[in-house]
Length: 414
Image 1 (cartoon, rainbow, N blue to C red):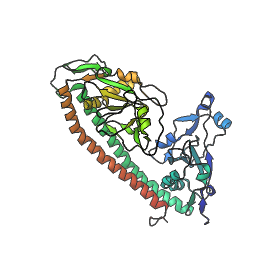
Image 2 (cartoon, rainbow, N blue to C red):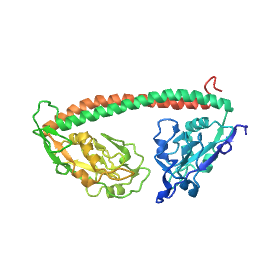
Image 3 (cartoon, rainbow, N blue to C red):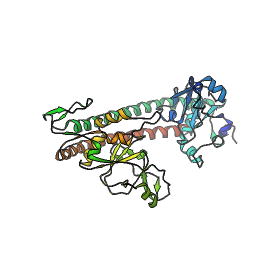
Image 4 (cartoon, rainbow, N blue to C red):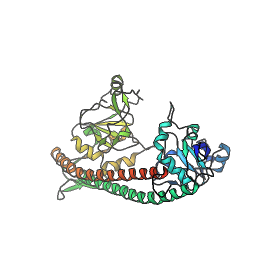
């Protein structure tokens, strides 16, 4: 073994995380930062200086919590594995993470970059039956090799400067995506609440947050124009090859991700589809949790199984695409936001969805609105796709740069 190579345990102290008892009020709301995989996953940069929740000194003492000194590395070791950051302030963490306090031969930021480029490898090492986890022993055994401390610091300075520049460009791309999404939202909302004719006579809608609507339109509860069918409240058994199951993870506005890895058998599909829950062409899948408020129309006859926390909205008398646009509009989301329940995870109940107000123009006008929106949204989604692709390229370049730097492939940094 070289002097600067071996298992990670020889180059840093690895600490496990803990969660104090949630029912002990004296443990929570203190001054000690307490990181979770959720906190790590939301970071835009490489460091962490604040957390969603904090604990008290009493919690630290009575639960023997590890509080990492500044400059340590915190890494999520339960799914998702590989989110990580350097702590800018002393910080405790939960059992979904592990902390690494760098030894004398290791520059903390260099260790962060080294582990960052090996995140895929760390994921592959994880094991578990109930949940996938990278154990303390597995993390401690990860083979690592370090250049001299001076070289580590030089590489870190180079990467800090370069990644800061890339992160600035990434942030601008993300801000542009947000503006494009806002533009799409405004376009849809205007069309399905005010119509396309600016000279159309208007009348009060009777709904305070909506104001006026075209005089020849009607306001109806969603249950009068569509069936709202809740999911089967049952956890299915998954198999390796079968019928894809769609969940809240796969539902986004106007989009169903058909690449889900969760599959069910024909028998399971029959059970999950009882009571009219068989997904059909023209149905709208609506998310009640996680991606809450997202509506996506089924546009082909691929077979799917409806997962939990979703419902089917099946049109009775409204053009399905018009209904999809309305459900994704600000007019509908305004109603949703007034009715969300739940503290940690926001959700909406089926009985509330049935009572949504829907603005209904004549059927022919619905078709005109759908055609008008589809034409314009094709262009808008095309713009977003191009920005997303450039964002992916920047992220790929960032990862490649880190890999090249920490593996000695950049001239002048060795």
